[in-house]
Image 1 (tube, rainbow, N blue to C red):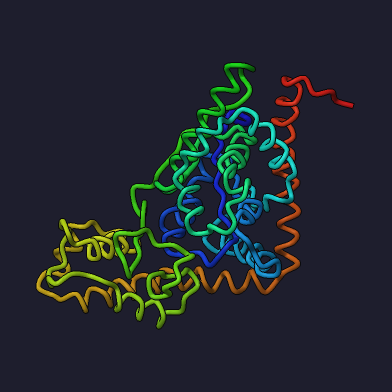
Image 2 (cartoon, rainbow, N blue to C red; image 1 turned 90 degrees about the vertical axis):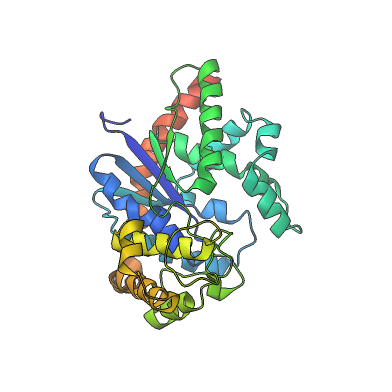
Length: 332
């Protein structure tokens, strides 16, 4: 907490096109936090390199992700928007926290197991210690709350364990953060396999709807979405595809599942899929327009990177200096 205002922290990787899962589960809800919290929003490029990146693509996507943050409603005057690698305190605190994180804790992380299976030729130490860098991201800013999807909750829980362990040895160092999981859009599932989470790295392009897809592409993908042999638009067991589409439609329209079931009573899946696609495309259209305007001015984006890094560094230095002093590091 800074100046009696609670702190919120979030980060998004510039490692691929962001999906409607990223948008509904996280970014769409970010803007509302700025009224009640001091908010830090980070483009986490250091996390991205745990998987091999093409340098030119990483550079381009860093600009694009910052532009998307702003296009989705994050006001740089109300929030601190910055790039992770521009604030060296993240990497410095991560090394220190590595020394207070147990090997067994990291080996239990679900995402490490999943990514190790996907990238068996590159199971590097950074992939293993990724959660410790994430803990450093959060703890640097004395964060009170972390808005996350359900798949990242395990990482925040580890962050809490690390903070509590450090605080036991060196009292009153870190604020212990709480995860906040959005009730809507918690977990958007694949359109091709609705038992799996929608992933920006999915090789099947029809499984994923990206924030920057054009309207025709969005509608085509929803028309191809896997459903079931019934024709009734209702929530139900064994109806993963329709359950997912109802959830997506609810997120974009604000309607409850009951209202949606009533709206499409007696109407088939084809009509419902079209409505979901149109609702999605219409909601994303103003975001896409703003994004294109922002991306056209690279100088303005770089100025925001510099401003955001200076703001973030001011807060990060305070925490890192306190940690170093408590550990016994000599300052010169």
